[in-house]
Each structure stands twice: as C-alpha cells, then as structure tokens.
Length: 183
Image (cartoon, rainbow, N blue to C red; front, top):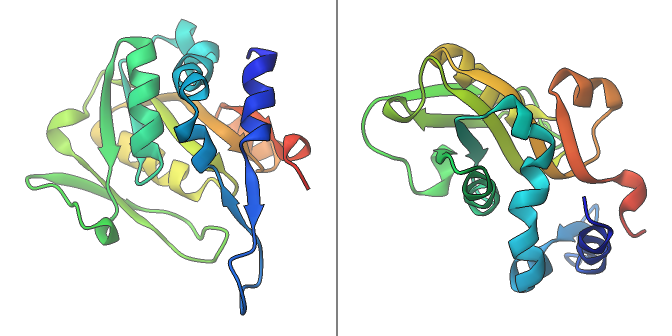
C-alpha cells in the first residue's frame, strides 16, 4: 500500500466520545469518504493483495461495506454483491441465503443475507469490510458462500484489530492494524 494512503487514512480517522453514558469511544471514518484522493485509492489498495487469486465477485456486509465493496469490485473489474442485514430497512426481494454470525464485539449475533441469484458455484469471493475485530460478520459471509457453493478467496479490510490467528484463518489483509490507529 502506498505510504501516502496509510498516512491519510490515519490522519482522517478520529476517536469520538459519543457523550454521557457511553462506555467507550467510537470510531469516525467519515473523513475517508469526504477526501477524494483517499476514496479513489481505497479500492485498488484493498484488492492489490488478492489480484492473483482472481476473485469473480466482491461481497460486503451492510452498511459501510456498501461503500467499500463497489470500490473494490470496480478496481478488480468484477461485480458486487451486498450482504444485507434485516434491520437496515433495505431487505431485497426474492430468494435469499441467510447466515447468522457468531457473537460480535458487543455480544450480538448478526443475521446477513445475499440474493441467491447473485452468488453461486464457481464464484471466487473477496469479502471486503471497513473494520474486522471479532470477524463475526466475515464468518457469516463465509458461511453464506459455503451454502451457495462459492469459494471465499480472502478478506480485505481497511482496519483489522483481530488476533493474528483469526486473520490467518480468514486470509485477511488490512491497510491498518491496531498499532497504526491514533490513541
């Protein structure tokens, strides 16, 4: 990854105090979307480590994945498949394949679904998301791929804070890791 992109990602990232009663700071990555140079560089940087695996499609979970997934798919010259959550208000119609994630960092299990007609046997899937911590949603997407006969070739993320064993299991490559984040 170009050093300039890494520098800009860190520079445009903030921890925000959500206010009284909050138990932790929350991340603000909105600067990434506002900066045209960063936005243009994200897709190519995310997919670079996976070009040799020849993905045929990018799958990303709602909501931030709906921004990053198309950037990555465009950089690869392949299509994009959205993994929907029931609470996002945009459930597609038609036949869907569902999977439930293991508990995430808040202890929640997240349901994800993709349209059956957009993912099937022979697809080589690159999973793309903004942040992978517990990898719960990535694992749900991998389960959907298995149900549909598709092969996940790996996962690309902007930030990964998961343990190295989880990253290795998911063939995860991230642009930033915990030591890169401002404190």
